[in-house]
Length: 248
Image (cartoon, rainbow, N blue to C red; front, side, top):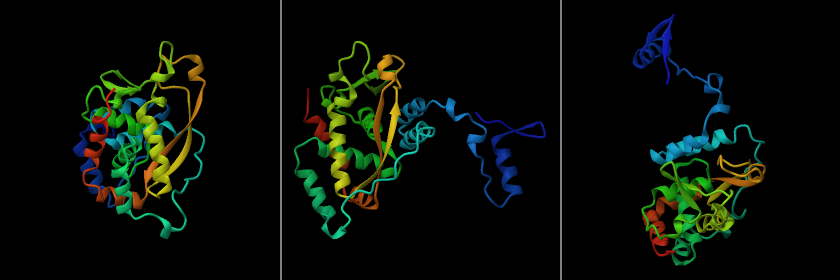
C-alpha cells in the first residue's frame, strides 16, 4: 500500500523506518489527509473489515470518517444526574441488570462491552458487531432486521420488496439498544453525541430512502461506565443467555 523512496531510489519499509530513527529524535508525523482523498474512503468496507478481523477500532475509524464532512455534531450531552450522591451504586446497577427480564438489559450489556475499548460507537455498529460475533441459535431474535450480504450480517434497509417491519430500525436488537441507552444515560455510564445521517449505505435503496435524513447517536463510556464493565466478569455470557432465551 505504501512505497518509500529516497532521491528516486526505492526503500523497504524497514529501511525507511531505520532512516527516520537514525535522523530524528522525535516521531515523524504524517497527516494522511494530505496524501489521501478521504472522500474516496469506503467507510462501509472499513466497518466490514472490523467485523471480519474482530478489530473494533476499525469500526470507530469508519464512523469518524463517515461523519468527517457532516455538519458539526452537537456538544456532548453529559449523562446522569448532576448530584452524584443521588446515583445508585455500581453494585446496585449490576443487581438491577441481572434482575430485569426485559431485553434492554442485554442491550445495556452489549453497549457496555463494545464501548469498553474507549472508542465512540453508534447503536448500528454495536448491533452489527454482536450479530456477527455472538454465537447464538439461528432462531434467535438477534438476527431479526439483518440479512447476509457479502458473507456478513448487515442491517436490513427499507427498499423495494422489503416490509418496514423487517428492517433494522424496528428490530428487537435496535429497540433494546435504544431503550438501554436511556438507562445508561440516566445512570451516568455513557456520554453521547447527536449526528445526522443522510441517505442509505445500500445501493438498492429507493430514491425516497436515499433522500431521507435520520438522527443517530454516537456513544462512549464514562469513567463510571468503564468501572462497571471491569466489575462485570460474565458480561458476554449475560448477552448470550439473553438471546438464547428469545427464539422466533
